[in-house]
Image 1: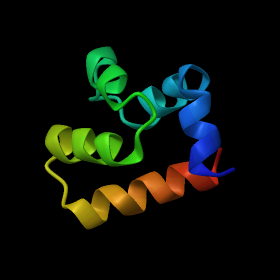
Image 2 (image 1 turned 180 degrees about the vertical axis):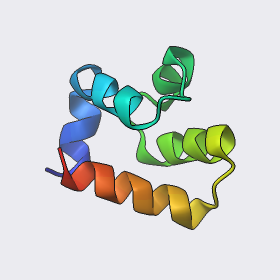
Image 3 (image 1 turned 90 degrees about the vertical axis):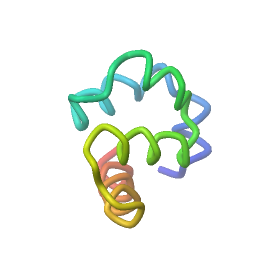
Image 4 (image 1 turned 120 degrees about the vertical axis):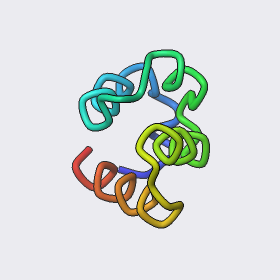
Length: 65
């Protein structure tokens, strides 16, 4: 699975992202709208993670999709 597929079908993957990062609100996930950098930014903000930690988590989540 590549990120273009995630972005194109964000509505389908939003639930999986919500399950992975439960602190993210629907509004935060809507702001991300499938954009990887925005999603990473929302994860950083909600969890107080570094950019690298957020990138790694998104990579791991993507590999499970």
